[in-house]
Amino acid sequence: MATDTVQTEIEKFLGQGPVPLYVGGAWRPAHAGEVIAVQDPANGTLLAEVAAGESVDIDDAVNAANRAFPQWSGLAPADRATLLHRYADAIEDNLELLSSLESLDVGKPVTGAMGFDVPFAVQAFRYFADLSVHMRRSEPLPLPHMDARQIQVPYGPCGFIFPWNFPFLLFAWGAAPSLAAGNTIVVKPAELTPLTTLYACHLAEQVGIPAGVINVVPGLGETAGASLAHHTGIRRMSFTGSPEVGREVASAAARNLVPCKLELGGKGAAVVFNDVDVSDTARKLANAITGNSGQVCCTATRWMVHEDVLDQLISDAKETLAEVNIGPGSEPDTTMGPLVSEGQRRRVLGYIDRGLATGATALLEGGALEPAGHEGGYFVSPALLTGGPDNVCAREEIFGPVAYVIPFRDENDVVQTVNSSHYGLANSVWSADLKRAERVAERLVAGNSWINAHNVFAYGLPYGGVNLSGYGGGVNSPETYMDYLRPQTIARPLD
Ligand code: NAD
Image 1 (cartoon, helix red, strand yellow):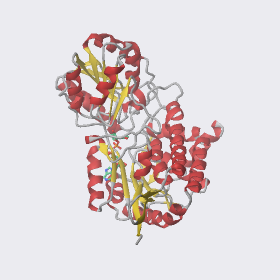
Image 2: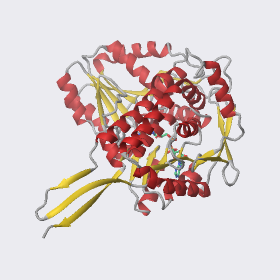
Image 3: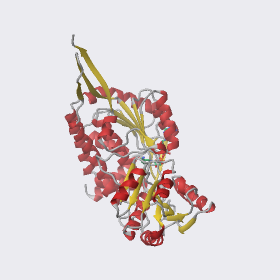
Image 4: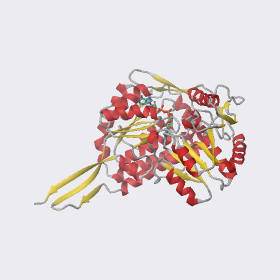
C-alpha cells in the first residue's frame, strides 16, 4: 500500500464516527451507545471515538464466540493454519498502516512499530499456525487390558484482557496460540489503545476467518473488562496487565472455576559485573529504558552495577540518553515518543518526586518535558536515580524512562538484593565470564534471565513471570499452545 493510501485509509478508519465494536462478524455500536475518547499522546487531541462496550455487549460477544466454536474447532488443523497464515500475510501487507496506527495510538516511534511490534506479531501467527499442524493431539496410553488414549481438545470461547503498551503484539501473542488450537476468542483491549486490535478485525474478515471466531469489545476495565472476567460462558481466561487488576480477574475466573493465565508487571534488574565492555553495556541499558518510553513490563529498571565500573557506566549511559530524540512517534527520526496518557505521565513524575523526597539522588534529572512545537503531549525525559534498595523507586514498577542504580561489590549480596523484589518477570546478567553469568542467571528468581542482553524474545523461547509477575504458562512457546487445549481421556476395557 502506498504511503498516501495508508494515510487515507487511517483517516477513513478514524473518521468514521465512533469506531464500532466487532461481534459475531458484525460492526455495531455499543448497546448503550457509550463511547471512549482515544487521544493522541503526542498532543492530547482527540484521535477517534470508539464504542465502549458493557456487560450486554460482552454477553453478545461470548454468545457469538460460542456459536462459532463448533465450526472453527471442527476444522482440520491444517485448514485453520492456512487461514492463520493468510491472516499473517494480510497483517504483513498492512505493515505500514498498522504501524502508523499503533504509533498514533500509543505514541511509540513508527520506526519501532514497523521494525518490531507488527512484524513480530506476524511471526506469532505463523509460528503457532505451523506448530498446530505438527503437535500431536492424541497420545496412546500403554495400559494393560485397555485401549486408551488422551486427546487434546480446545476449550471453547477464551477471554483476553490486554494493557495499552504493546496492544497489537499482545493481541497476536494471545490470539495466535488460542485460535491455532481451535478456540474462539473475546478480546477486551485497553481503553487507551484499542485501535489496531479493531483494525485487525477488518483483516480477519478479509481473509475469511469465520464470523464469531474473533470478537473485540473495547470498553472500560470496570465495566467491559470485569464483565468478561466474570462471564460464565468463558472457558479459559488470559489477563495481561497490573498485579492489582490481575488479582481481580483471577478471583473472578476462580469463582467460575475457569483456568486463568496472568502476565503481569515487573521490576527487572540488570546485574553488571566489572569485566564488561562498559560503554556497550551502558548504551544497551540506556536503550532499554527509553524503548517504548520505558513502558515495558520486563525492562531493566534496576541497574545493579559493580562499584569498579559504576562511574564510567553512568557517564556513558548519560551520553547515550543525551542523544535520545524525543518527539512524536509519527516523526521518522524520533527515538522516544511521549508516554501513553496524562495519567501515566503524572504517575512517572510522581514516582521520581517521591523517590527523591525519600532519599534517592538524581544522577540524571529527568522529568516533565515539552518539546518545542509539541505542546500538550505527554512527554517525559529519561531519569537516572540512585540510593538504597528500599527506596520506592527501587521497589515499585514505575513504567516510564527511569532507572534506579544500586552499586554492589559482592555476588551473593547482589543476588539477594535482586531477589528481594516481589516481582519475578525478567532480569539480566552482564559479564565476560560466562560461567559466572550462567551461575547468577540461575540464582535470580524470575521467569526469565538473560545474559549480556536485556529484552530477549523469540518464538520457541518461553516468556512468563512468577510471584507478582504472574502465573499460568507464559507466552511464545509450545507450552503456550498446549495451554489452550484441555486433556481428555478415551478408554475401552479389553476383556
Ligand atoms: P491495568 O491492569 O490497569 O489494565 C489492563 C487491562 O485491564 C485494561 O484493558 C483495563 O481496562 C483492564 N481492567 C482494568 N480494571 C479491570 C477490572 N476490574 N476487571 C477487568 N479488567 C480490568 O494495566 P495497564 O496500565 O493497562 O498496563 C500496564 C501493566 O501491564 C504494567 O503492570 C505492565 O508491567 C503490565 N504488562 C505486563 C506484560 C507481560 O507480558 N507480563 C506485558 C505488558 C504489560
